[in-house]
Amino acid sequence: MTASRFLLAASGFAFFATAAAAEPTAYPLTLDNCGETITFDKAPATSATVGQAATEVLYSLGLGDKVTGTSVWFNDVLPEFAEVNAKVPRLADNDPSFESVVAKKPGLVAVQFVWHVGPEGIVATRTQFHEVGIPTYVLPADCVAKDNSVGVDGTRSALFSTDSIHQGVRELAQIFDVQDKGEAFVAELAKREADAIEQAKALNLKDVSAAFWFSSAEMDIDPYVAGRKGAPAYMMDKLGIRNVVGSDEEWPVVGWETIAKANPTMIVIAKMDRRRFPADDYLKKIEFLKTDPVASQMDAVKNNRIVVMDAHAMDATIRTVAGIEVLSAALKDFGLAK
Image (cartoon, rainbow, N blue to C red; front, side, top):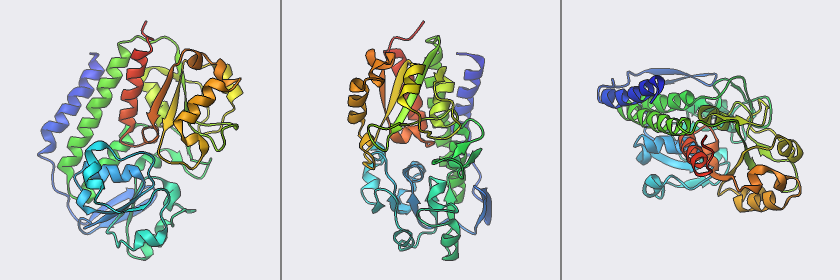
């Protein structure tokens, strides 16, 4: 273990050690959150969520009994939360209506993506929620060093970091006065990430590259792939993998001819339950890769170096750590060690 990894791991253990000593939240609590200032006089009694990431953070903090409605699901809920999730109404598989969220009279609406509640919010604007007395909180992973007004899914000005995920966990823990649980969960995430990185470092990789394919509006048009500064880029950077895509956009559209010319060592494809586009089905992605006259010529396809990863892990969520673990394990399984 390198000195830096040892320090990171030690830091994780320190969180566990100090979690029991975390101070209770002092109300009123004021936070700067994705361009808004929000204040809480007490812990919210309930919360509705817009985005699977927000739902799973609340479940991870032991707040499942406070969640009164969920929405925007990409994958099944994490197995450890199946029982609690089964008791919570699903407002919508995808985007909920403003009315359905307000009808729950939540003490807080916790949100994953800015585009759901931003200035052009598909659900509503944050102002609309605030005007009916419902505060909103947006996970910082979707706004820290990111301009959501540029590009379809926003554009990052700096490489995403799991620090912004930790920030979201800690702030929600602070809002609900469960800071001990927040610190313990952050420590768990940090240790898992450090372990996966250490495993990849031991492989001594040389010039390994990858492309992440999330979906495509149609099977025969250019795919949405991971840009160079989002969560997949962070995974690749930490594991010593080169991203063949150079765009700052979160999920730019890039032609197969361009990707094939870059000839990535591996292709990572998203598996999801959503069926907004034909390519949401990962089996159709695999079929395309193996039959398309251009894509099938890539070394990654010829050598069956195709990694299937939960779509929710490809977004900036607590599952990003699981994505790092999946990718690290694939590097070993593909025999890429030097």
